[in-house]
Length: 305
View (tube, rainbow, N blue to C red):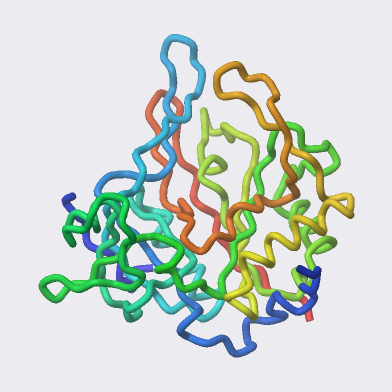
């Protein structure tokens, strides 16, 4: 897609969820909540995979947090529009998205996202004081922070699948179709919704023309009540523990690798519903012999009536 306006490069408690997912994206959605924000970081921000030439092991290299970015919020009213946006984002290593818009900033208007510390410095506020809960303007340009209080939730939600340690074998999906079948059995309204499916960053890594890691996928759907997205995810997680689709995931020590606890988990990552969360849908970075990046494979899957 060539028409997407991307940010310029910068220098610096019930279980009532039966009717939440849209049965079809033809149902009307308010334009002011059908938004996706594209961020351009000052440097590559997506996953980096490097080959250790000594051990021939593939290593995931953590990249710096995005503390400064140029951004634009786009109106994305249906699955076809989201497909086009993700296709564009997927070709750039310095782009990421959030499923929200920002207080005080019109759609399609470029703005800058600062860390809370940088915003306080710009406004000469005391250390640890609260930052503004709406955008500020300096020299005619909008500035804001990526804090929950500044983020207006989108009607788009992302279900994220990755195989995690301790996942029961019967919940391990070997292909996206298998995962989508499980999701359809578990999540009310999922089969009827139009969906946009994309490979996760790790799933795009090839090593000598073969997948380097277990498959992971992101599935985007629209919901009827954008303000309820986060609670919707929490309710689904709680509900999963009463079904075959929930389990207790092991938590491992980063120092020793030993199991230090457990937390509830399901066939999707329940942490992806926070409105301010970054989704790294851009192109992963590879460094080493035999490493390459698969096409993103984004596709629209029409809902079943």
